[in-house]
Each structure stands twice: as C-alpha cells, then as structure tokens.
Amino acid sequence: MLDLCPKRFWDISSNLSLLNVSHNQLQGQLPHPLKVAPAADVDLSFNIFQGPVPLPVAGIKLLDISFNQLSGPIPPNLDLFMPDLIFLSLSSNKIERRIPDSIGQMFSLQVIALSSNKLTGDIPSSIGNRSFLKVLDLENNLSSGHIPHSLGKLSHLQSLHLSSNQFQESCHHPFRICRVWRPWTSQTIHSVGTYLHGLGMNAFHGKVPCELSNLSSLQILNLANNNLSGRIPACLGDLKAMAKRQTIDHYLFYAKYRGACFVESLVININSLLQKNTKTLPLVTSIDLSGNSLVGEISEELMKLSGLLVLNLSRNQISGQIPKSISALSDLSSLDLSNNNLSGVIPTSISSLSFLGSLNLSDNILLGKIPFTGHMVTFGASSFAGNPGLCGDPLTVKCPDDYSCKAGPIKEEEAGMDDVHDRWFYLSIASGFAAGVLGPYLILAVRKSWADAYFGIFDKIAHRVLNN
Image (tube, rainbow, N blue to C red):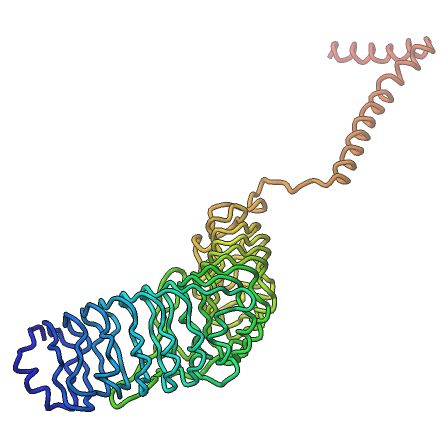
C-alpha cells in the first residue's frame, strides 16, 4: 500500500482505542495534534511518514512510530501529553538533538526505544528514576558524555543497548562503567546479566574489569571497537554461563504490552560478516573484544569456557602463542585472532575443533607448518594470510620437508664423522698403491737375479702370443 493518508482518516481516528496501520507505505505528514481516544494504542511503524514527532490530544499507552522518516527533536513536554505512556518506540527515523529530561518523568514507561536516529548529547540521569523500565535502546546515535550512574538503579532492566555512540568512560581503577552495572552484578537480572552486548563501538578506555566475572549468567560480552587497553583478565574464565552449552531456543520478548513487545536481537561479527540473531540468541555465547589496544598473552583460563561459540580478539596487540589447550573450546564455531602479534606455531590441537565454521589467524607472526588435518582442511589460504613464517597447505609456500631432493640439516658431530671416513678412504687407496706397485719395484731393485727371472717370464709369454 503506497499512498497519502487521507485527511478524513485522521478525523475518525479520534474514536479509536487501537490505531494500527503499521507495515504499509503510507506517506505524508502526521497531524499535530494526533487525534486518538484516551488510553489508546497507536502503531504507525514501518511507513514513510515525515515531519515532527506528533503529540496526541489525549494520554495514550503505546506510541510506535519506528521505521519512518520523522525529523526534528523529541518534544520536550512528553510527560504532560502522555503521562501514562508504557511503550515508546521512535527507532529508525531522523530525529535529532538531545533526549529531553521530561522522558524521565513518565513513571509508567517500560520501553524507551530510540535507536538509529541522530540524537546527540548525554543520557538524562532522570531515566534512572523509572523503576519499571525494562528496555533502554539508544544504540546507533551520536550520543556522547558519560553514562549516568543512576542507570544502575534500574532493577527491572532487561535489555540495554548503548553501542555505536560516542560515550566516553574511563575504565581505570575503579572501572567507571561498573558504576552502571555494579548494582546488576549483585542481583539476578535476566537479560542485562545475560546479554551485555550494548557497549561496543564507543570511546570507553582503560582496562577490562574483573567485576564482569560476577555476572554468572553472562552469555554475551561485547566491548568491541573501544579504546580498552591492558591484558585480557584471566578472571573471564570464571564466566559460568559460557562454560556450558546453552539449550534454550526461543525468542526473547521483553515488556509485553497487549500486542506489542520488544524483540531482543544481536548482530554478531563473524569474520567481518554481520549476522543477526533473534530466535537463536539464547543459544549464543560470545566474547568480542576486537578493535581495542589489548596486550599480553591469551590466558589459559579462557580455555575453561567450553560452551563458548564465538571468540573474537582481532585487531589488538595480543602477543605470545595460541594456547595448546584451545581444543578445550569444543563448541567453538567462530575464532578470530587476526591482526595481532601472535607468534610460534599453530597448535595441532586446533584441528580437533569440529564445529569451527569460521577461522581467521591472518596478519600475525605465526610460523611453521600449518596443521592441515582434520577439520582444518575446510579453511582456505585467507585464514592464514599475512604470516610470512607459515608454510604448507593451503598456502602456496612449501615447507622444507616438502622438497624430495632437499637433504636435512647435517649435525656437527655427523659432519666430523664423515670427514674421518673420507680420510681413511684416501689413506687406504694410497696404501694399496704402495703395496701393489712400489713393493715389487723395491724388492726387484734390491735382488737383481729375481728381476732378471721376473722380466724373463714376461718375455716368454709375449713371444708365444706373437708366434700364435
């Protein structure tokens, strides 16, 4: 359906307690004020409506105008027009400027979804006063500043998305972002304690905190594309939910209200390909610390996370060798250690990772023969490119033992023995020559009678041959 919404339609909408024209291609500017019945649910999502965010003539419970082309700021007096609003979604529009403080005065709010807009400024601290809030989705905006400490009071929060912004938090001791999640680490909170994936692509700096290990139900940790430094803490090996295989397979619906809800999803970077997970999200266990400035070796403690599916430590400054115990991550489906300073040989145990579907070890300083056996034969040369010291299949660079005419290196002791053997060989030749030629000559020279008899025999033989 692609058409302008006729004016008479809005004239009759004032009598409707449910206004749902979502998933069409309706165009035009929404009327202001928006004529709806008191306590109505309004769903105008997935259309092509333009203009500013409209305010209703009466208080409503649900307002979803996501996936349109609305522009301008969020009205500063939302709380006066919609004091009992439960569900607010304005995601995927062109809304600008700062989130108004008044949004924190709407006491019934359970969902604030404002992702994929052009919002700037900081997060109003008043949002932390909304004790019923279950979803806060602000990802993919231009928001900046510090994350307010008051968010730590949101004891019912189930989903937090702050990624792809410009938030700046110091993660030095103490880790300031833990001001936000420290209250959650001491409580049993299902989603924030399970899916801490909304902090990537910001400007956090400092160290990865050990406090994260207190989140015993944490399945997804995404701090990618920040400015984190220091070592990867060994205590991450204590994340209990990643140490076992997850078996629950269902959609995650938060803040269900009548026919509306917030569907949890996650985009995972697997070998530079973005994969969106919705229904399968409860099965996913993932650590993504890529795109930071982390140093040091990969801790053996991380190998205790046998239920881990995705491990991405690429684009850091990690050194040392790939742990031989990497095979303990038996459920691993994606491993990306590219663009680091890893050295040494690739452990042969990696070939036993039978579920591994994506492998990237490129651009390190690994060396030796690639263990191209078992499941490793499914990966191409690109998985190992940029390591000048590597050789063997699937690379075109042959290893030294692949050349049939190539002799192995000669040890110094073996070289010494060969030299002795050569000397005895030539000495035996010289001795044989002396005994066979010089010996008779000397004897015959001393006894003249023997010489005459000796050479006389040869004369008789020669005479008989010639006569015949």
